[in-house]
Amino acid sequence: MFRDKCVISGQCIEPPTQNSMRSIFSLLLLSPLLVQAQTLVSTMPQPRTALLEEFTAINCGNCPAAHATANSLFTQYGDQLVGIEIHGGSLSNPSGSQPDFRTVDGSMLWSLFGVSFQPQGTVNRGGLSGASAWNNAISSILSQDSPANIGLSSTVDGNVLTVDVEVYYTSATANVDEIHVALIQDHIVGYQQDYVNGAQQNYDHRHILRNVMTEVTGDPVDVTAAGTLVERTYTTPLDPSWTIADLRVVAFVGPASGTIYQVHQVDADGGSTTAINEARSTLDLGNIYPMPATDLVFINVDPATAGNTLVLRDALGRLVAQERVATDATNVVLSVADLKSGIYFASFAGGEARKVVVAR
Image: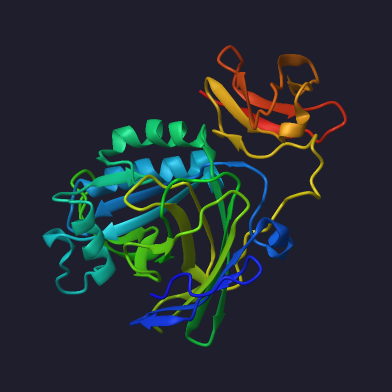
C-alpha cells in the first residue's frame, strides 16, 4: 500500500488500492484541530472491550461445550464482548449435507496463531487458551482503559457491503497499529458433532467468520499520536447465499502482533456506532462492567468529575456504597462483594442514574 504520500495542513490522504475482495477507498488522518469531523467514535477516554476468537469445527464433538461457555459470556457481558467463530483443521471438512464454514482467511488465522487443535480461543489476541480461562481474561481486559477508540458504520447496496471505520487516539501509542474488519454471520442452522448430546442436525451456529475485509494481518496505522483521527473505508461483495439480516461487521484495532485495544460490531445492513462526546454531561456515567457484577464493578467516568462522589443505591433508594473520584480518574471501582443479588443504581448528585446488576 501507499503510505504517507502527502501531508497538507495536518491532513494525509492516501491513494486507494485493491486486493482481491478487499478494497480500501480512502484514508484520512486528521490533526487535533480537525477532530470535529468524526461522527462514529468518541473522543473521550473509554475502556477496552473484548474480542473472543474461537477456533472450532463442525466435527469436533467437544466444541459445543466451548460454544455454550462463549454464549454464556456473551449474555453476561453484552456489547462489551464480541465473538468470531473460526472453523478450521481437518474436523471442519464437511461431508454430505454438512455445512462448509471453511474460509481462506480462517485457515490463515489458524496458521497465524499456531492452532493445532480445537476447541481453543484467544481473548483480545492475548494467547490461546481453553474455555475455562476466557472469563478471567475478559474481566481483566474490561478493567483497562483503551488508548484508542474505534467506531464503524456499515451499509449494503445490492450485493456490495461498504464499511466506514473511525479510530480516535485518546493517548499516544508507541506502535504501528492495525485496523481489522471482519464479516460474520449469526444463527446458521446445520450439523454439529456433540459428544455429550449426540450429533445434532439443526445446531445453531453463532458468529461464523465469512470474510476478513482487511488483510488478515490488518491494515497498518502509522500515525498514532494523541488526538489523531483515522478514517478508512472498506468494501466487499456478498455471497448471495448469505442471509443479510444475520450478517454483522466486526472492527477492532491494536498493535501489530499485540493485544487488541478495542472492538465493536454492528449490523451489516445499516448498523452504526454513535459518538458520544461533549454533549454528554460530565456527571453522566459511561460504560459499566462487568454486567452482572459479582465482586467489583467498574464505572467509566469523565475526568472532570474528580472530587465528586459516586454513590450506589438499592431499589429502595438506600445508600449501599460510595466512592470519591480521584484526580484524572477515568474509572471508579465499587465493591459489591457484600451486596445481595439484585438491581442497584449508580449516580452522581445531579447526574443520571444507571442500573447495576449484581448476581451470584
